[in-house]
Length: 206
Image (cartoon, rainbow, N blue to C red):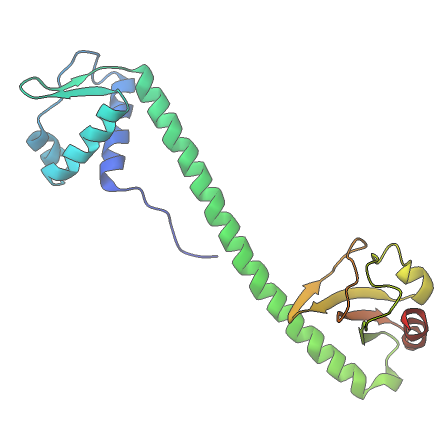
């Protein structure tokens, strides 16, 4: 799995923490928050980071920042909305990361399967007479009846007693294409069956 982690900006973390403290009752509506210097010292950050956190809270209508009066707590309800919003963003970021990790794993797995499949085909070609379960490759040329039809529509297995395990298309390998995969011109499909399946497939597609 990828070790990448989606980090929140520090000012955003501070804003969420202050919103949580307001919800917890540490601050009430109308209370004045500590000055920027005190907050900067408390969170061990620069006053600029605190300023950005306060702008975010002000924009969300949680506090009111005014010259002379300082930072006044304005709404608890908006704190809950704010916290909920960033929980949703966390969930989306987590799911996005999971999806990217899974896609990476899928690509790695497909490359490994393709490598093993190529070795199996090469091995089988050299020892055809001793194999009862053999992978075959067939190219689909212009004019073949199966072009534009699905594997299921063609009744491929019923006609050949072989199973298609992959299709090479425009330089990519589609693994386990399934019954609804459509045959296209210039596809090279890989099927597994017994020795007699080779002749059945050849007769069926040509």
